[in-house]
Length: 251
Image (tube, rainbow, N blue to C red; front, side, top):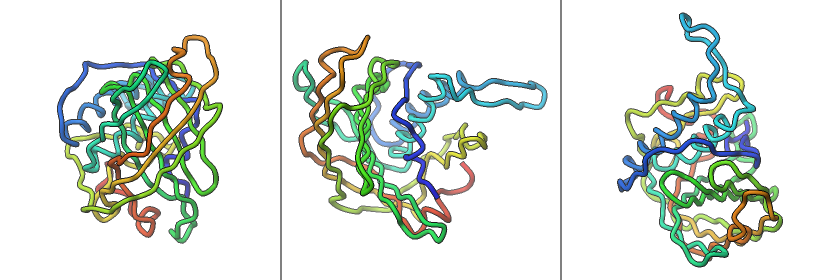
C-alpha cells in the first residue's frame, strides 16, 4: 500500500486563488483550504453526462495538480493541527511563511510500516501562492517549489531533516468537508482528514536548505530557500492503522 504523499510528483502547478483568510485555529484554516481545494478540483473536472453526474478529472490540467496538493495540505488542519509560522530566508531576506508536517507510511500488505514519508509543506500565504514541498524518507529525499501559482521546479540541491519531537492528542475530524478525489477511481486518493483511531497530533523538528535552477518566470529571490531548524506542527499517522482504517466515515 503506497501512502498518498508518494503519489504527488514534483511537477505540481497551482492555478487558482481565493480571497485571503486571516482566520486562526485549525478548523478555520481547514475550511479556507477546503474552499481552494474544491475550486481547483471543479476546474479540473470534465463532465460527460450531466443527468447521470458522470465525468472524469483531466490529469494533465494544472488545476488537477493543484487539487492534489491541496488535498494533502488540507489533511493537517482538517485533522486538528494548526499550521505553524515558519521563519524562511529567501534571496529577498527573512520572511514569515506557514508550514505543516504530515508523517505517513508506505506499508506492506500486512499493514506493517515499510517506508516513512515525512513531508513538510511550507507556503508563503493563506492562498498558497508559493510553496516548497520537501519529502524526507529513509529511501531518499527530494524537494520542489511552486512559485506564483504556475511555475514549478525541482530542487537542484537539498539538505533537509524532519523528525518527530513529540506525540500529542488523537486527531479530530473537521466536520463539513468534502473530498472530491474520493470519487476518482483513477487516483484512489484517501480521505483528507484522519480520526483519532488513525493518527495523533505531533510536533516535528524540521530544517531545509534548497536551491533551484534559474527558470523562466521564477523570481530569482526564490532560487535559494533556507528554513533553519525549528518546531513545526503536524500529524503522525499510526502505521498499524494506516493500511486498514485511514479515516472516519467515507469522507
